[in-house]
Length: 296
Image 1: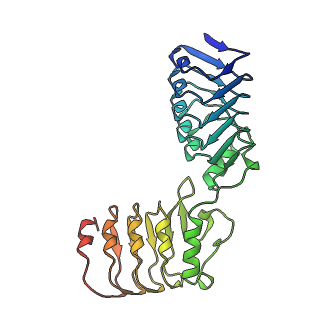
Image 2: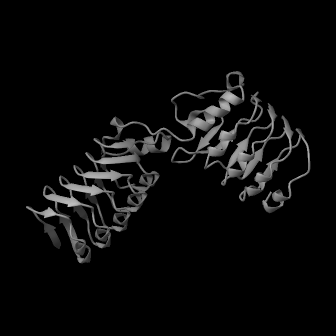
Image 3: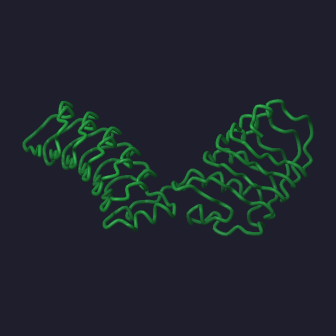
C-alpha cells in the first residue's frame, strides 16, 4: 500500500502528486498549506482517503475530485474554500465520509448527492451552504448515520417567486383549493404543484380550480416546467409571450377560459411542446407561422 502522510509543510500542494497513480492514502492535514487544491489530484485513481483538513487552502473544490472512483473518505474541513460544492462529488459511489465544515462554501447541497447511497457521515456546519427542502433530500439526510445539515438554512427555491406571482394575479384567495400556497411548506406540498428531486417545479396543474384574473409573465421563470394546466377557469387577458421561454414545456393547456388577443409567435420557440390546447377562449387573429416550427 502506498500512503503519504506529511507534517510541517507550507506553501501550496504540488500538482505533481497527481502522478502517483498507485497512491491509496493521502493525508496533508494540519499543516500550513495555502493556495488552491490542484485539480490533478483527481487523477489519483486508486485513492481511498484524502485528508486536507486544517490548512489555509482557498478557492473552489475542483470538480475533478469527482473522478476519484475509489474514494471512501474526503475531508476538506477547516480551510478557506469558497464557492459551490461541485455536483461531480455526487458521482463518487464509494464515498462513505464527507467533511466540508468550517469553510466559506455557499450554494445548495447538490442534487447529485442523492446518488451517494453508501455515504454514512456528512459534516457541513460552519458554512453558508443551504439544504434543499424537497422530500427526497429530507429522506436522504435522515438515512445518514451522522449529518449536521439540519443546522443550516433551507434553500429558497427560485420557483417560489413565480408561483407567488400566479397566486396574486389569478385570485389565489378565491381558488377552490389553495392548500399550502404561500406557506413555508416544500413546493411539492402546494396544491397542484409537482417537483423533481431538486425541488424544481415540473408540473403546475390548476385546471378547474376557480382561477380568475391574468396569467403572469413570471411563470416563464419556472425553468424545469414540463406541464402547465390552467384550463377551465376564469382567466382573462392575453397569453404572455414570455411563456415561449419555457424550454422544457411539453404540455400547455389553457382551454376553456376567457383569454383574448392573438397567439404569441414566441410559442413557436417551445421546441419540446407536444400538446397545445387553447380552444374555448376568445382568441383572435391568424395562427402565427412560427408555431409550425414546434412539434405541436
